[in-house]
Image (cartoon, rainbow, N blue to C red; front, side):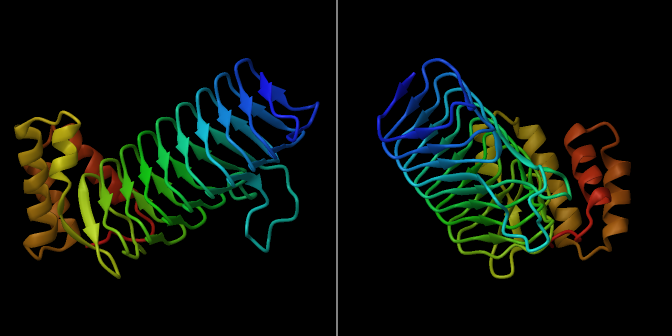
Amino acid sequence: MNIHPTAIVSNKAIIEKNVTIGPFCIVGDNVKIGEGTVLRSHIVVEGDTTIGKNNDIFSFVSIGVKPQDLKYDDEDTKVVIGDNNQIRESVTIHRGTTHSYITKIGSYNLLMAYSHVAHDCIVGNNCILANTATLAGHVILGDYVIVGGLTPVHQFVKIGSHAMIGGASAVNQDILPFMMAEGNKATIRGINSVGLKRRGFTDEQINIIKDAHRIIFREKRALIDATNLLIEKYPDCENIKYILKFINESERGVCR
């Protein structure tokens, strides 16, 4: 371990080998930090917080502090962060409430400067939150989601895997997988075709997703009629099954 003499690290914290804790960091009693993780400087990690391996955490980040929820009464809740994340300057990640008891971030994510992950959020893998993107409480992101800068996401919103949200948007309903949304309030503009190509989706897969977008968003069908048509046309397509499952499980309604 490489712990700077100005850092305050509880002797109850569990710090694995090859961890670097830089100047003026504060690490609390119930914190666990995995091998190879770097806390650069002026970072606060407290509460029941587990940080995995090889994370690079930049200055003035705050992880595991009390949620900004007036109902919270010091219950035993936690933050769990995976491996190989980059968490940039002044990011805030709050621990959960009694709703789910956990705020969870996966692996290989990039949280840019001043982005915020509120209580009870779940962030998948390989996501990007651009500068000052804000996830309110209970937001769920799938894998490979990109949220543009200055974009707030409303409480309890779900964003499906491979979706992209443009900068300075405002998201108040669920965003279907594979789609691209933008605007205040956000609406669906198309599919995230560039992102899908970068991640190895075939032309056939992308064309089917484009057809699903046309059926759901462009043909002015009732949502139930659109889903029934997709079931009929693509009964064995896993990507269509994922879209349909997402629609069926939506609680805030689907952004259209």
